[in-house]
Image 1 (tube, rainbow over the protein chains, first blue to last red):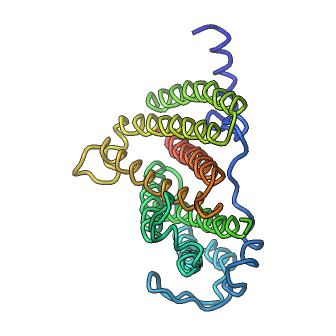
Image 2 (image 1 turned 90 degrees about the vertical axis):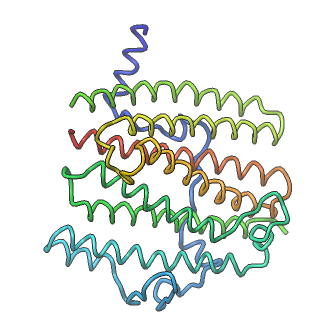
Image 3 (image 1 turned 60 degrees about the horizontal axis):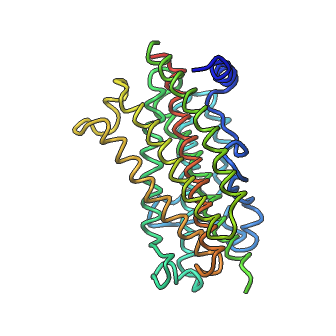
Length: 183
Length: 141
């Protein structure tokens, strides 16, 4: 390898060897829009405070406040914080279920869900494959940190919450796209 | 420690390769003559990124530390292959739906949206895998 290539690699390694910007990879990144903008246009505006029940997850207290829970738990320990994160993930899972239900019940999405064009699939499959990825990835992520930084439970729950937040945003992108489609 | 150094070296080489290949994507996009050409550039880029993800996972699978991750009844490489296969299923479903939301699957905008989604999702997967590599390296095994 030529000297300049070695120097180039060295400079990259000196900074963040894993950081690759969207610019470097070409084109603008696919960014989800803000939740509030989407909620106001499609998802019921009261979903964040309304008691939510779902067959897929247990009922969550309607006034669950993640930040308060985390503050209280931080004086106890990280496994206690992990419990707060787990509850917050469950709450978001239920909000995601509502987005899925809205898509499922929207006639304009039925073409995808039931076939009819080359773009087709099943919402259940989408949900199941995502949940599988989240659990697999977070298991791998926590394993990579095992015995080093934080408990396995804490690292797993932190990862699950992070991915679930992102997925909630990505699902809302679907709704926003649909509403931006000209009639 | 030796493994961590090896990981860092492989990652730096991958990054160098990634930068030069990403430039090819830019060239492809700038020379595209129509929407179908753009979609084709996106497909090529998503394929390239998936190969990068696959290669990073193969490096993890070759590391003895990850031998006991997931299912010990099957080989480590099979565990990682399953992981990637399942993610691809998710990506394809999600991006198909993204494509559909534009004009209900009709027209070239749907195809461009679907393929661009595929590029960005795969980019994020690579970033997720990098997070694992980075955590492992910091772990100091």
